[in-house]
Length: 358
Image (cartoon, rainbow, N blue to C red; front, side, top):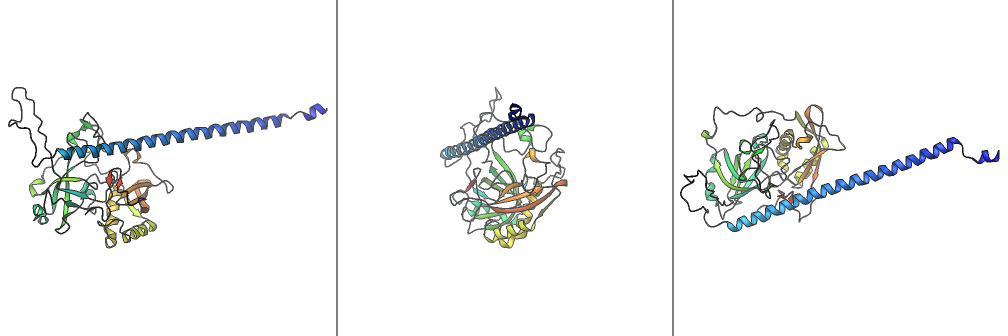
C-alpha cells in the first residue's frame, strides 16, 4: 500500500510530460525566432552595405569623369559617323558640364512623382552654376510657361554593371519592353528629360524656380530649353498602360498630421521650398504624391494599419500614412528626420534643407 501511495499517479506523469513538452516547444520557438531575427538582420545589413558600396562607387566614377572634362567637348577626331564598309557606328563620347543642380523636396527615389504633371504643387529650383552657365544664359526664360530639363540619372545604383539592360518592365506595363520605349532611368546613357513649369527667376541667388517636377534633390542639370507650341503633338498615341489611371481614391490628413505639418513649417523644416505661409500648397503637394501610391510595387493593393504605417520622405521630414479599403489614404502623422548636422544624405541623395544649397 505504501509503495502504491508513493508512486506518482498517471495524471501527475501526464502533467509533467505536458509541461516538459511545452517547455521544449517554447525553447525551440525562441531559438527559431532568434535565428530568424539574426538572418533578417544579416539580410538588412547586406542590403545596406551593398547600397552604400554602390553609392561610393557612383561618387568615385563621378570624380573620375570630372577629371576627364576638358575646356571644350571631346570628340573622336573622325568626321564620318560610320564606317561605310562595315556599317559599324563609331562611338563619339561627349563630356557634359553641369549648368546647375536641382533642389527639390524629393530625397529618395521612392516618393518622387513618376511624372511632374502628377504633382503640380511640388516645388523646386535649379541652382545655376555661374562658372558654366551665367544668369545671362537664362535671360528671358521667365517669358515661357514651361521648360525641358535635360539631366543625369545620378542616383542609379547599377553603375557597376558591365551589361546593359535592353529590356525593362515599367511598374504598370504587363510585360517587358525596350528600355528606350520607357522613361526608365536605366538606359545606355543615363540622361533624362523632364517637363517642368517655370515659376520665376532670382538673379541675385542665381536660381530658376520651377514646379510640377519629378526630379530628386541634387540632380545634375545639363541643359534647360523652353517649351514651344510645336513640342505638343495633336495626335499623340501611347500604349494603354501608359495612360492607366491607378491613382488612390482620396488622401486625407488627421488633425494630428495637419498640426504636425504646421509645426514643422514654422520650424523651417521644408524651407526654402515651403514656408509657414505655404501650408496649403505643401499639404496639396503631399496629397498629390501619396495619391500616386509611392509604395513598392509588391505592396500596392495591400492595406495597412495604424500600428504599421507606411513611411515616405518629403524634404527633411518623414510622412506616415495608411492605406484603407477602396484606396483611401490617411496621413496619420509626420516628424522631422532623425539626423544630425553632419548628415545631409538619404540613400546617397542630399537632403533639401535651408542652407545646404547656396
